[in-house]
View 1: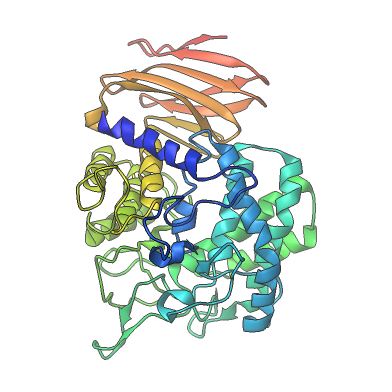
View 2: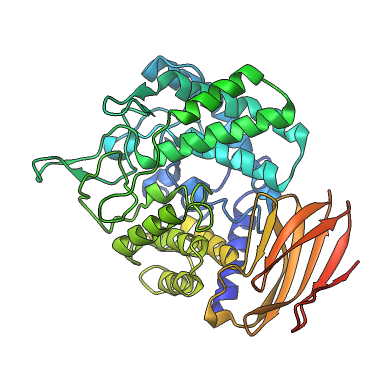
Length: 444
């Protein structure tokens, strides 16, 4: 089907765009029809470069994540200069515009160039690679990068005057604007946008976990724990939306393409229907307000949002919207327009999210399967812990699963509205069958 082809096409584009020892794919991957490419063919760190790599780990293409990890490590010296020069701060930071020469300073228009959490977002990928490939030697290499990013925020964030929360300032919610109190003047620069709060909370939390794994920096770890408690909480507006800013500002463009304040839903995991139902409902209301339109990559991100919210049919509707002529060219390149490759990778990631999700030692099989995919199979997707998963289903129900783990481990598996525990020894392969009755057949 077209859906399956689009997923495989996303894998093909990533395989074609990068290799270990090379640069990560830019806004157009390797493909351009002019010397002066749109956006200078650079890297944008307020979603685009990161979206290019959402497919890598669950798509079992971890080696294609390595160029981004190497690129992030290479940003540190320039990012240290930017932290000192612009903020008088320790550690390192990166803003939105970036290029192969490791540009990390604020750039161009303040409505998006002022965002200084690009490095924090990149650090999510350092930790994600570890979760899927738990190698302590790798973690030792990237931990100083994560720690340096934390040091920047510890030394640059300020207390906002109303509540005393620690916030980034000045900052933005990328590329979006709100109305000032006069109801006419549009503004973008603010204190402590919701996305920034989520990114810093996640950075601190992941660095705490990395410090515990490596048994390093106990005092620094405690400092991060204290700082997490001083970050602003998520705020829900009187209308039931997740607020994009600390204050309940009126949006200048309610259907804006960026949905940055839902980072905690995806690709982050601070918001889930199970653990934070009120926040999940606020995300759902926000998405309804934003609508299903937008640029190609924006529609791709919304597929992932709805998959995390458990609405497979809505996610599939967004996939079909993404494949419409206004969002996809005849050769299946994603249209911003013009061509922008992150939408291809984000769309393929959304397909993965509908079929397989893994967090904190759990494996969720067909978590948001749309009705259009009542029967099918996938082979060789990967979950956190470096375990490969293959799954066959019919009439919307899982029939057979194969789990194959290199390091071994114990997982809580969710399938067909059931939960059960599976333990695998290193190198073990297990076959699970799901007959009509509730008994589950396990074959070594």
